[in-house]
Image (tube, rainbow, N blue to C red; front, side, top):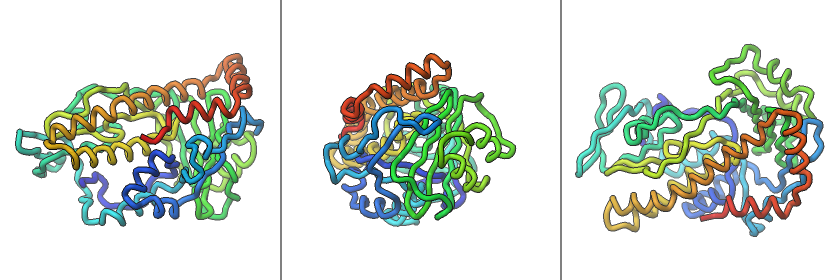
Length: 350
């Protein structure tokens, strides 16, 4: 595995792995270790900035019709630790930035930015939103800016009491989410309409100006988070593509189907990709058969998530007062059974 970072070190903030991702990890014998590295989530609710509920609280076990199904939220660095412990740190070669490849019928030569050339039988491009492998394979230009940016952070252990449910709060052109990730830490995210490429001066002061008057514990969470632990990321995705492979080169994760984070499925769909690709490689007569099977199994499902996540984000970011009123009223009138049925259709374990 080639990693562009010069060393493996703690990075990122939090994420939630829904049961479709946990099912793949269970097949690898890693579900218990991942669960121990985070917190199990059981309830979620949508709020307005005053703290009033927008619709019913959702019991997450109802979505998957299985009391044993787990949604696990954890720090991204702890997930990395679990995966590295299972794979062995020696499988990762750091400090290699892939810029392209050359291939023949017999193999692939991976080319790095320092001129290094590495020969392999199969190149899996899992190099993210700005994938160099995708650029050569598909050449579909720059990703699409969603119209909003995000801030993410993790509170120091014990600084704010962990919440007893996941909350996401919708305002006008802005959102704020709070998630318990275990070990006394809280993962939070904030989203706001903004031009791309923006920067912050005093990030906590600017976030307090945007969200400080929202319901508790938003202000406390912001105040508890050191400024150097706040990450700002503009939100991008790409239109779905139907071809993920060519010869001995194939795409996976954000390189194949970058999506906005609105459904919390980015990491889960990459994990699903890995499980399907491994099974396809194990069960096919030829490499081409394996990659065609993988592509056929994954393109439709991931494309649906890309489009649904984009639509969800567009509605969540509405800012016109009448549109926001109508949206919030619709959410209040939607019964839990309808929310559960919709989530089941999208998030069913495949």
